[in-house]
Amino acid sequence: MQEWKIGDHKARFDNKEGIMYLHIGGEGYTAENNREFQKISEEVFAGMEDNRNVMVILENSDSIHSMTKDARKEMMDDMKKTGGMKADKTAIIGASPSVRMFTKVLLKISGVKNNKFFATQDEAKAWFNE
Image (cartoon, rainbow, N blue to C red; front, side):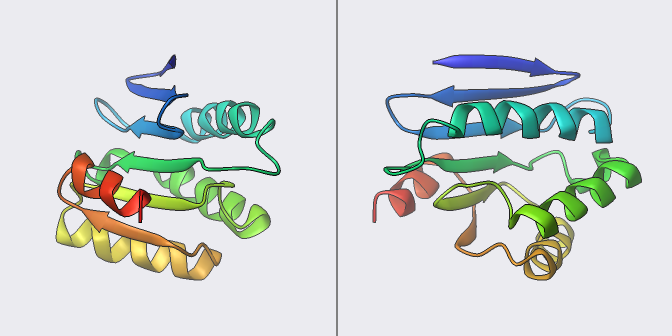
C-alpha cells in the first residue's frame, strides 16, 4: 500500500486490489493538488502498460464545490488531452445529485468512458470485479 497527502486530500494505491483511491476533503481542491495527483497516478500506472487492472475510486463525498475553478478547468483540460487517467474503470463515491450532474458533463466532454456513481466502496468494488 502506498499513500500520499495532497494538501487536505489523500491518495493511496492498494497494490493487492489494484485500486487507486483519491479522497477529496477539507479545504479546496486546487489546480496544484490536481497536478500532484496526476503526477502520482502517472507514476503508479507507468508499469502497468500491458496488464492494467487499475481502477480509480474518486471519493467525491465533500462535493465538487471544494474544488477551485482553476482545478476544475485544469482537470477538464488534462482529461481532454489524455482521455483521463489510464484506469479500466472509474467509480465516483458519495456524490450529491448536483455533483453527479457536473461530473457526468465533465466526463462526457472529456471523452472518459466506463465510469459509474456508487453510494459505497463495496458496490464499486463489486462493479470492478464484473
